[in-house]
Amino acid sequence: MAKKYDIVALGELNIDLILNDIQGFPEIGKEIIADRCTMTLGSSTAIFAANASALGARVAFLGLVGTDDFGDFIERSLRERGVDTGMLLRTSEHNSGITVCMSYEQDRANVTFPGSMNYLGLEQVQKLDFSCTKHVHISSLFLQEQLRKDIVPILKHIKAAGATVSLDTQWDPAEKWDVPWNEVLPLVDVFMPNAQEIEALTGESGLEKAIAAVTPKCHALVVKNGSKGSIAIDGAFRREVPAFLNPEPVDCIGAGDSFNAGFVSAFVQGKPLQECQDAGNLTGAISTTAAGGTGAFSSPEAIEAAAKRFRK
Ligand SMILES: Nc1ncnc2c1ncn2[C@@H]1O[C@H](COP(=O)(O)OP(=O)(O)OP(=O)(O)O)[C@@H](O)[C@H]1O
Ligand SMILES: [Mg+2]
Image 1 (cartoon, rainbow, N blue to C red):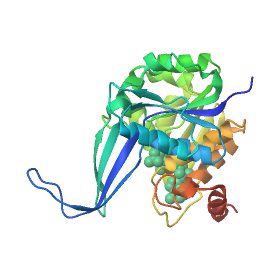
Image 2: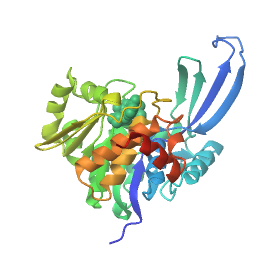
Image 3: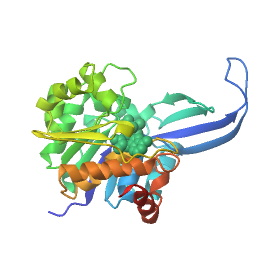
Image 4: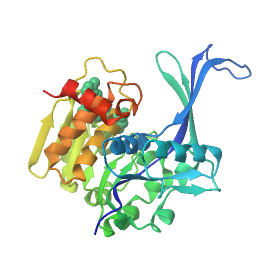
């Protein structure tokens, strides 16, 4: 049966309110001025969805936002990036999430209100029919409290509809990694952590030990390792490839999500694991050529021009 979507991106959604050129540091009881302020769509899963759409996949977003103005802004921003919002859920019970980023030259101080992000769980997901999509990509598990708690029955519900699943946990800010991995990993077709995450979640020190701890439970495993590239493993198959190194990255924001976008876009076309890995390595590198997570994916021409810099 023809599917409406190639990919459903299931993840967090929030606003980023970024304050720049701040005259000092905030202090209780005082007020300071920022000379610039931008409001933009935050969320690493949104970067994934936008970039997969820019690469030509038919992408829908499944997330929970408020019926507030921020929710309207998020919905509009997704559509502007070519992402279908037919599966986006709105709630009047919780406000949309927001991160206030106080940006200084060296780094950022962030305050996040997760809001509705914490309340997307089995209750809503089990009402949805996933036979409309080839694939579901789940990300940022630890930024979504209810999703983390319900992840096993949610995965079972999605798999029962015949969709394949990829999972990028992202970092756990609480550093508890509290998920029943032995139940989760067999339900995931492609597990996509980065090197720090797989070590932290297995409690192993050293990447090889961490990989050895999860592979007996995994189908395909892809470990992202920054400028070192990535490792793909599936049963006896193992392939380690260096990054398409960008010696002068503009920034590395969203490199992992862009890797995921390239990898999953190839995966839903039925490409073999090594081609998916090469596609991910290339789109991860492309993302480092422009500011922010989606800057390098503004048009097919921009993507192709950046790709040419890395292809031999
Ligand atoms: N400096 C770089 N030059 C070229 N490619 C890079 C560079 N940094 C990262 N990449 C590519 O992007 C991929 C993902 O990067 P990384 O390992 O940082 O993911 P991540 O830690 O999950 O990132 P994120 O913070 O976006 O979640 C890498 O596997 C690599 O292919
Ligand atoms: Mg990541």
